[in-house]
Amino acid sequence: MEDLAGKVVLVTGAARGMGKLEAMGFAREGCRLVITDVDGKELERTAEEMRSQGYEVHPFVHDISDREACFSLAEKVEKEVGPVDVLINNAGITDCRAVLEYPESSLRRMMDVNYFGSVWMMQAFVPRMLQRKRGHVVNICSVAGKVGNALMGGYCATKHALIGITDAIRQELYRSGVDFTIINPGYVRTGMFEGGKVPFITRWQDPQKVADAVIRAVKKNHAEVAVPRFAVRTTALARGLMLPKLVDLVFHLLGQEKTMAGWRKDPNRPF
Image 1 (tube, rainbow, N blue to C red):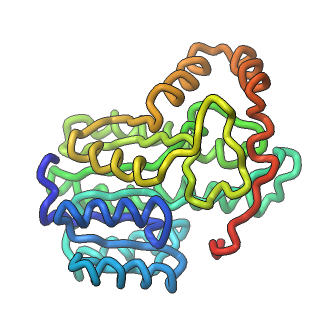
Image 2: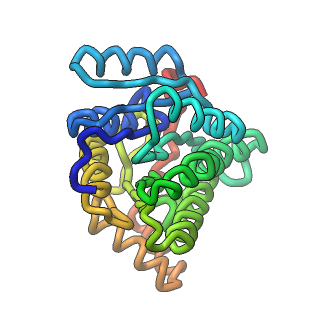
């Protein structure tokens, strides 16, 4: 999809952070933006900022974990804005703690948002793309979906699941005209992992770099993108070769199990 001008792009979790940057990037490409988030106040601020720059934007307060609401949103967006050409499943939440300390509510909420939310959005919007025989879906996954990380088990589980189902639907809809992209960022400085410390061999990623990678992936129709490329691919390869003890040893030497020991919830995030 080299030419994005005039395309309708929907970005979930677009009130702040990476989602906001993705929306801004697509707007600069001449797209018509639909942005959603559960934080209505911050979402409207983002919409006003985009309008002040002359971009077309349509904000919808929406909780992607509500399946029926996703189907209602698809009808409303198509009626009020037009058919969605590109769906960016960006919305996500985290809770960093030891696996044995997770309350049920936290694990279920992460799975509802990070995994089921993206599935419901695909079920709501992809059939409409299939009718037109064109469309593109980007699922924001993570290196955490390639290999587990101490004190991030619940989050890792959601991203493993999202990668798996994205691979499956891409195969199911092969040559249908609808394309799918997995984006696997490393540690991104957005506030979502406030208090965390990255291992000494890597660094925090600029969220703008990830947002730019998303836009390139849609234009070039990449199936999977890693940011940063070398670190994420190397980590995924080691685990993919079924060498978990080697991964454990390397992570221990890097102090990986302590990266989220200082994590704290961002008070500006209402979830």
